[in-house]
Length: 110
Image 1 (cartoon, one colour):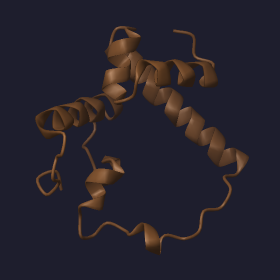
Image 2 (cartoon, rainbow, N blue to C red; image 1 turned 120 degrees about the vertical axis):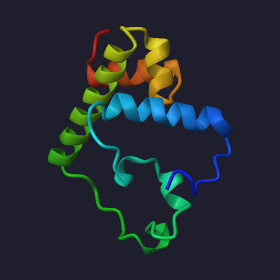
Image 3 (cartoon, one colour; image 1 turned 60 degrees about the vertical axis):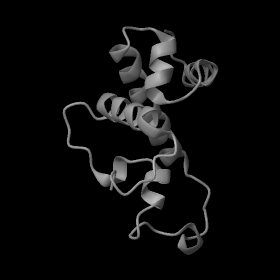
């Protein structure tokens, strides 16, 4: 799947993805469902957004699960970066400002 992707960001995009996946799924095999949507979209077997079911509002339980998973991922990136927010943001492929907003939203004090 990675070979079939066009990699518009060239080697830097691939490097960032590999770093992010190694932080998020340390010690586990990287499964196709862990890959970002843009990589999957290049695949003939990827589900089309047009074929997707209409979005339903998330229940509180699902929202709580998503927040918990996001918190786990962010804490993993902070741990991997030795607490350096800038490096953690790079691992997560988000801006430092976006990381700061998410830390505040999730009540994480770093």
